[in-house]
Length: 407
Image (cartoon, rainbow, N blue to C red; front, side, top):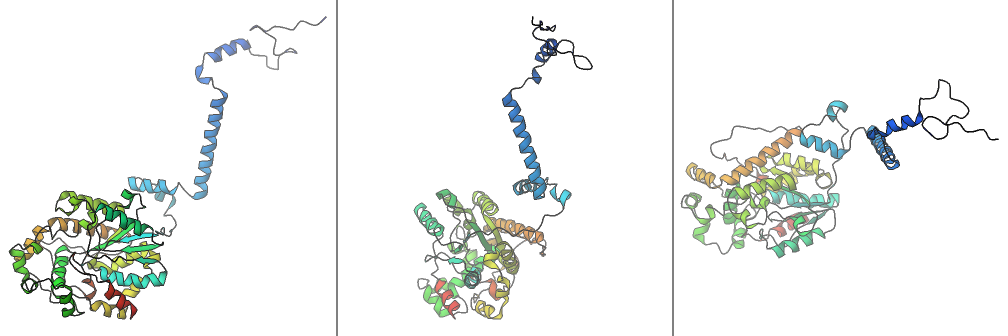
């Protein structure tokens, strides 16, 4: 006869039919199961088990990546730095220096009478030296565009052979609005009153290339307008010396919206926002050598060696030809009136100047910062600091650059 299988107290077959293990068996396996069933937090399915193991695996792999790469991912470091609570440098010391990324699309929407003729001449030399595509436009006197004109220009720029640097007098264009890739923007501005005075006399008398040549380019200007005294223009509130004509720099950064041409807080704040979000660098003409140094640092594939070219005596001879002639300084009363009429321009100028000096300090370049004067102080510009056309009424000046470059 078969030996009857022993029953354990909880019912069912005895789990130890050949005797209890050393130390004795637990009292009532069935009771133990019942006690476990009363602890719901200990119950889990195979799916829960798999999820836990997968989480653990991800954590281990992430920890391994952290160890091998010397720290957290770059975007986390950037985010911590942006939020102002990075501890990476404290724990690990400064990270190794890295080459800045190489942008293949750069736009220089140059502001009139802010030294860009000098920069364009440098770019023509650099484009052959470094092999990038310098793209210019056949239209030089139209800064404000219709929606269709914006779409057409953006399409033409975006289809240029990369790497390219596009340059033209044009107010800021939002490429992403029309489905394009937003390029890197750069620009240079100067003291607003100095810019206005340079343009005022340039339109009338040109530069050292020849007064007669420039008079031919502005045949519609009457003699009484050409020789209009600057003080009379300002004090008598002529259109050329009042708003909206004086509201000139901000629209280059505000953009193509109609309100960007209206002097006021809206255009000012939008221009500041675009500077922060879309411009790699906005330099100050009064500190042009530092501007070139930073451009060489940020965009070496375009501007490497630019400062040595700029300082070359042969290049400076070409720059001497573009100095505005017969320029005079208005009376203190007229200057003060200009300062009031251009208060938004000055607020933007000082904001950009502050950001530029902050950037210089990060790279160890010293800035001479003095207490803000009650009215603008007029420096005596060096030959290469007054070199740019063009008011919207001016004609094409690119051919002269091409002729100079071919010499």
